[in-house]
Image (cartoon, rainbow, N blue to C red):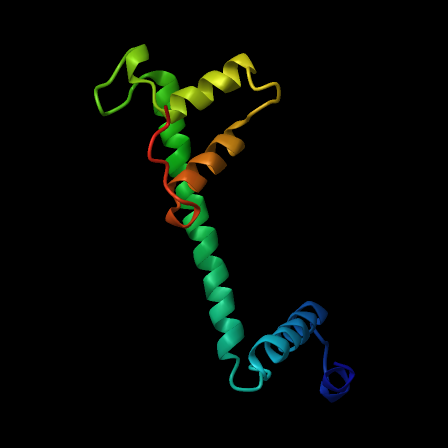
Length: 129
């Protein structure tokens, strides 16, 4: 790191340098060598990966927000209305409203539960009842 700073004739971006050093150490430990010296392919891939995760997270958040709003307003597109059509989102909203769980549950927690249930790596729910 010090050698990199000494080789520069101008200002040094310490954030970028620390990120590069951290990436080099991580790659060296996990993959056996530093990849920043080979054209920076790995750091670019990791940056792109992070950007994709942020984009997907934003879209998922917007999707779950719309689902929750539809359940609250009763404007669901499936045509189901009334108590007998309660699904998991309805149950979570009911728990939120009544505080029946003994602790507060907010929209972020509801979205997290929906995300977990929809992720096949966490196992899918066969039955809610």
